[in-house]
Image (cartoon, rainbow, N blue to C red; front, side, top):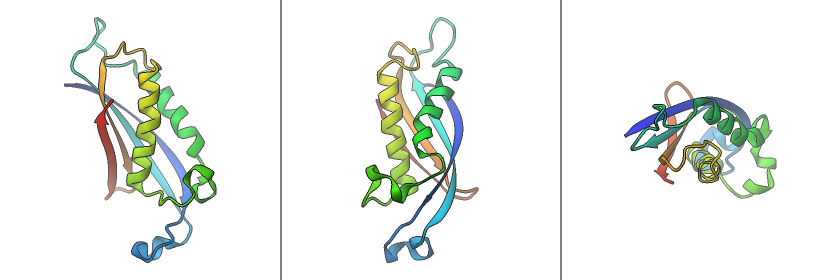
Length: 131
């Protein structure tokens, strides 16, 4: 399987009001490096899985509503623990919707997507599935 991966980042704030999260219960900031990997069984006549420029643009658009936000204040996340795992799934859904709508001009080649959030140099989480 072929793949192209692009990268961006977001800075957010959030809290996890449950004892299971220890010191992360209080409001804290996070800077996530976000990778979006697009998988295809075949490449096109130009040797592409997707146009990298379109992929970078789509990822930036998906991340824009999260940038510099306190996720605790976002209505769509009320009552949700916005963990690394949760956010990778949220970003996956938004990106998969764009891929299905043709934003990457891939003519249906992209069959699988993986969104990886690097929480730090020692920890990361991701969501991966067929689209």
